[in-house]
Image (cartoon, rainbow, N blue to C red; front, side, top):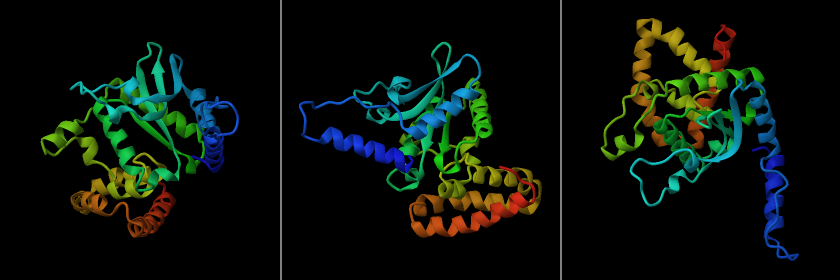
Length: 254
């Protein structure tokens, strides 16, 4: 959320909590923030025919728990937008994230949403406001999401946790744990550079594959125990920024 958006929301809260005037309830001037409106306009401009965008969708309106519990509080979370097809089937969920999503208080919520979406089999795309609006990148991500939705890969997070079994899905195994924790998203441009370096360079030789194996045996523990520490993010951010800058100079793109 951008500063102006936050100011707009704070003003609305101050106005609504004021005891002045005869009315307890007041209509909001806009359903979404100015930043969300800009992103949604860019997304709608690249949507293929037969798809439409709906802002502010509650998970409970498109996802249900198969064990039918009495309460489904974990699903009462609003997602910034959802792309539906012409039959109103939910295809892609979209979140517009600012830097507050990198704070320790927000990460558990975002992780839970990610796991719910992976278990339900619906792609979740996160666009970070710090990178600005890039129509070409948005178009690429939307097309990828639509293709993924045709053959969804589902990960049984809940049952794996309940049975204390490890989930060995390939999607999880290939995660860039430290980079994702530092930059906030598995699909952000910096992590994409590192993923391409891993797949196109490191994985092609013995020493590179050895490094990958060691990395995946240690990095999940590091992230699990230190991802919310300032020193962890500061230390690895400096190292990764330099590495990414070098890799980009060698032709590895975002």
